[in-house]
Amino acid sequence: MKIAIALGTRPEIIKMAPIIRECEKRGLDFFVLHTGQHYDYTMDKIFFSELELEPRMINLNVKSGTHAETTAKIMLGAEKVLREENPDIVLVEGDTNTVLAVSLTSVKMQKDLGHVEAGLRSYDRRQPEEYNRIVADHVANYLFAPTKENKYTLISEGIPKEHIFTTGNTIVDSVQESIEIARKKSKIMETLALKRNKYFLVTSHREENVDYKERLKGILEGLKKISDYYFMPIIFPIHPRTMRRIKEFGLENLLSEIKKLKLIEPVGFFDFLMLESNASLVLTDSGGVVEETCILRTPCVSMRDKSDRPESIDVGASVLSGCDPDKIFKLTQKMLEVERKWKNPFGDGKAAKRIVDIIQNNY
Image 1: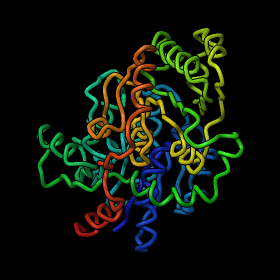
Image 2: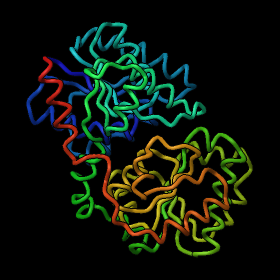
Image 3: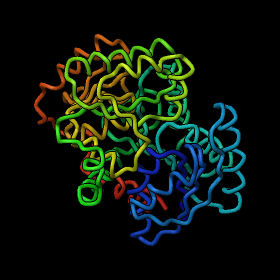
């Protein structure tokens, strides 16, 4: 059996890392197909280095572009690689353009396809990710659903039960494997002169937020309200796309009015885990960050209208604020008061083992 593990963004690297590690541990024949969708491949090397992964890797280096351009480039490159390497099964993770392109290419080449993190839905069709994961789910042979709720979603859409496996989410594996290493290796708290539970952490990059002036403005106004009331540092590892939009929309003056705001470059996984785990509260529009903060028991305000991680809301770890500044502020106040005693709903840290077991048992 030969396995192809396809990825192209930082979240995919983090969530596929436990599967790569499990394949290495078992001595399986596999390779990584890195599409290079997210920024620059060289910028992703820090994640492989930090996670101590050295898989055989083939890089397509497609870089950014329109959705159509990126998808087309990945499909052309993936077809060539899959023809030459001839894997028995291709694994994709999540909901990116890499997932869409590699999924379509694989099934058209009659390769078995496994979708890691299957069954997530936001039911918000403004999000391109929603289409990507729906397509991947409906063409995959193996659907690795993180939770029972995700499994029921897939069944309700007519996908046969025998193709669905509830495994837990590999992000739990990754966080559990990395948090202790992060505590020993990361110096980000000292570098930024931060104290535990004495700062806010912010991330925002989603297309449906940052590409629309009023929504991005609402996020910044919400942060200003928080900074005026709490006067604590707000750490913002800012996505290049978000910074570009702030300049294009003429929101730089508003950004400068946010007291104690510290814009920093995107950081590695270990540093980001430390920032998440020590923050008073995290404000984000990332689904992956919602999962991580839930696992780390850090309260989270999700700046989205709908959630594809409702389990986090159900246990009281996060709330939805959308981009309304008043709602962002009020829910920040509310979440700062919650007890951090919720149970992690995303699994026990053994998802990668289950996924690789399932693949091996079927070959």
